[in-house]
Length: 81
Image 1 (spheres, helix red, strand yellow):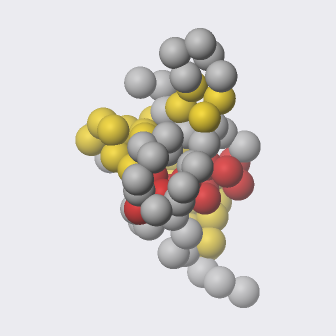
Image 2 (cartoon, helix red, strand yellow):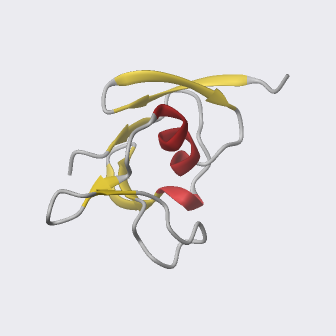
Image 3 (cartoon, one colour):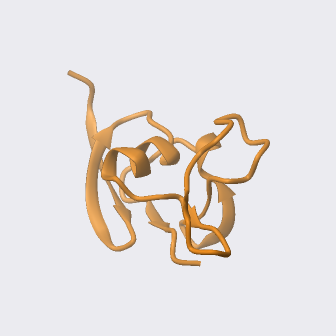
């Protein structure tokens, strides 16, 4: 069994396997990466950092491409921007 770590997504603790991307952690938690201008939930589309649909605030830095960043223990992720 892979090591498990805890990250915070929109203030809620989520346990995920070590090494997964932030986008994968959000998908496992059932949280969309962001919402569109019309309020539609958006998620990782290309999963290689080109489309920017997976943007989130990660450890205080806005507009990070969550499909390109691996989770680390204690990471703070916010999709409320």
